[in-house]
Length: 87
Image 1 (cartoon, helix red, strand yellow):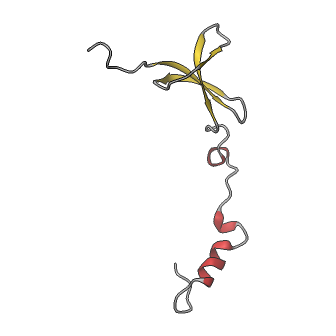
Image 2 (tube, one colour):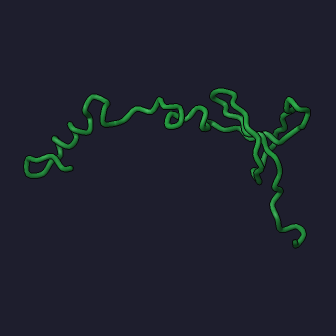
Image 3 (tube, one colour):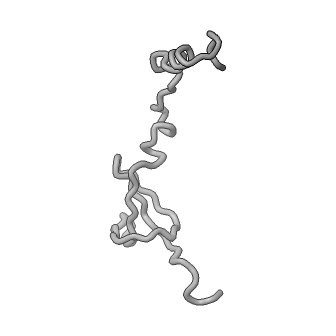
C-alpha cells in the first residue's frame, strides 16, 4: 500500500446524546475528543443526535401520518380533481 494516501481507520466510540447509548465500531470519522472505556481503552469520541436506540422508527414509537386525525384524507378531499379523491 502507498504511504500517506489512506484515511486513519480505527476503533471509534459513538455516543447517542439523547440517551447515552454507546457503541464501538471502526471508522474514519474525524474526532477532537477522547473517551475512557470500561475496559481501560481510550478511544476517539463521536457524538450523535440520534441512533437506532432513540430513533422513532427503530423504537416503535413512530406515528403513521394516515392515522393522525385523517389529515391525509382531508388533504385528498380538499385537492381532489373532478370530485373524487386521488389514490
